[in-house]
Length: 162
Image 1 (spheres, helix red, strand yellow):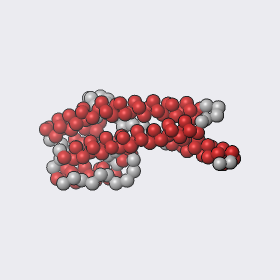
Image 2 (cartoon, helix red, strand yellow; image 1 turned 30 degrees about the vertical axis):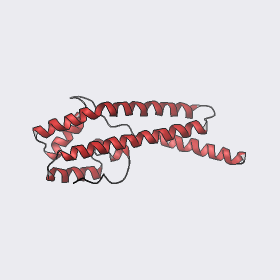
Image 3 (cartoon, one colour; image 1 turned 120 degrees about the vertical axis):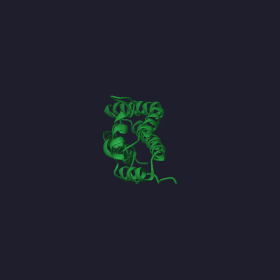
């Protein structure tokens, strides 16, 4: 490959990585006042009129997933810092920037998978009427990313399992 083409390719990789790094959404909050996922639980309580038993089951699911999500969020933050450092170099190495960008994409996909699994588990706790409302909120992305679409990827929500 001619040097000029390699330089253009390298510049394109750096630009793509810079755009990708700047466009990285913040991970959804899993903690805060009231424990892990409390904001999500409160939104679900209001939107779906959850029973006490459902609230407890939702909180249990959120608590179970929290360690995985926290670890993934830390990996994403660490990778994002490495990417920013690589891009801040006087002569950013396109291979390093590309590798870190690809790693960030993989971490985002892992997060999307975790979110989709949680959504399916949550949906299983709901009555048919609540499931209909939940599905509608999922398709909108939900406030604060509780549907997962705004944080972990695009496209329609996962198909409901019967």
